[in-house]
Structure formats: C-alpha cells, structure tokens
Image (cartoon, rainbow, N blue to C red; front, side, top):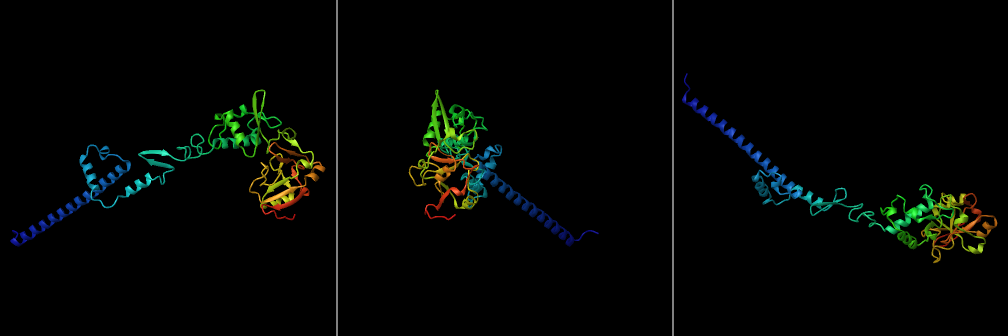
Length: 333
C-alpha cells in the first residue's frame, strides 16, 4: 500500500529531528574540543612563561599556536596557577637551598657564594679562629692517633702539623695554612693555650695544658708548685648540677691528665684560663694541706694550676670552702 501523505510528513519530520539532533551533538563536541584545546594552549603558555621560553621554541611549526597563546593572555583578569608557582620559585621559597635569579640557578648554603659555612675558603667562619680550635684538639688529644712526633714536654714541629690531611671547621685544609697563620692563631688566643719555641731553626708548638695524651709528662710540660705561697688562690669552677656528684666522689680529672684549677676568680683581670666564665659554683682548695700530704701541683705557662690528685681524684677532704657565684654565698658540704 502506498504511504499516505500524512505518513510521509511524519517520516520527513522525524528525519529532520534526527538530523538536527546529530548536528547539536556534533556542535557540542566541537565546542568541548575547542575549550579543551584552549585550556591546553593556556597551560603550554604558562609553562613557557615559567621557563622564560618563546612559545615558538617548543612548537616552531605551529605559528597559529603562538597567536592562540598570546590571545589566551589577553583580557585575562586572573593569573593562572602556574604564575604564582613561578613567583614562589623565583623568591627562593623552597627548592633545597637554591635561588633563582636572572634565569640562573645558583646553590646557596654550604660553600655557595660565601653564604654558608666556610664558603669556599673560610669566608663563613674566621679561618684563624678555626685553625686555633683545630690546633687545640690536635695538641691536647689527637697527636698519638695522628702519629705526630710529640715530645714529653708536648712540643711538636709546626712543619709536621702542616702536613696533616685535616680540615678546620672553616672547611680549610690544614696544609693550606702557613707558619705565619700558626703564629697569628697563637697570638690571638685569649687564654694563651699555646707556646711557640724555635730550636735549631725549627719552629715548635705545644698546648700549655689540658692534655689527655699520656706521652706528655707533667714534669716536662709544667712548673712544679713547691709551696702554697706560689698559689695563694686555688679554685675550681663548676656548676650546681655537678655538685652532688663532686661531693660524693671528689673532683675527677675525667679523660685528661689533670684536674684544673684557676689562680683567681673569673672576674680577676690576671686570670687568663682555668675555668669557664659561666660557672655558678666555686670550690676553693686547701693547697697547703694537699701539698703537705704529698699531692703534686703544677702551674702551666698560662697560669692554670694542675694536679693529678690521688689516682686522678682530688678528695673532698681538701676542699676549703664552696661558694655560689657570682653572689658568693657559702654552700655547706
């Protein structure tokens, strides 16, 4: 049966609706693809700005892309997320100690531009001060393990020291220092920890006291105290937190050769060394009684009073008095 006019009209209308629907779907897809492509273009543009590269350096064959990128930047009232990231990177916020400046990355911190510890040549820390600290450790405690030829009086050749493969805390090789710098380190030391002598054209150095090296002999290193008049004040500085232990077992030399005493109070101008400036307890020794009982005492070149005590300990029996410092109130014991 031939289709009626009404059926033909219905079929035609249905086909038209389907065509329009396909067209709408295709148009929508085109719009989505365009938006996605536009977002991609803006993303690439942001990356180019972050890296400070021209847009055509990434896609040289696609000049339309460059114009699209430029267009994406026009009329944009808000910065993309990458812009803030780029700024934070340039400000040196994070990034493991690196700082971006003028398109160059330069390391900061250790050895970087003198900003870190020992920046390339001791710039971050005084090289002479660091040299003095290393000399103290070597001459008091490390000479044996470093196989230095140390005499019984504690002297070693400066030339031998300057051959050691060690670095100071300023990151400077010991062997790169000069004899003049050794002299300067000795001169600068406000506690006069060192002595220099010249023998047969050879310069020698020693630590005046504080040794843990057993090859150094007290009688060779130090001057014996023969009478209490040679040490009218003999005082040991310590801290409240240590007092209970000291009163229980006496003053111990610990890992050193001697127990250290000062020949005066921390504020006395003539006192160079012998106790720390921040002590809060003073233990005065009855040196007359100790000498009478056969305990040997010595004095170093920098006026520190030293004793090996009795088997490395100065017993409480020889304590004359204990005071707080700086108030100087008596502490019973």
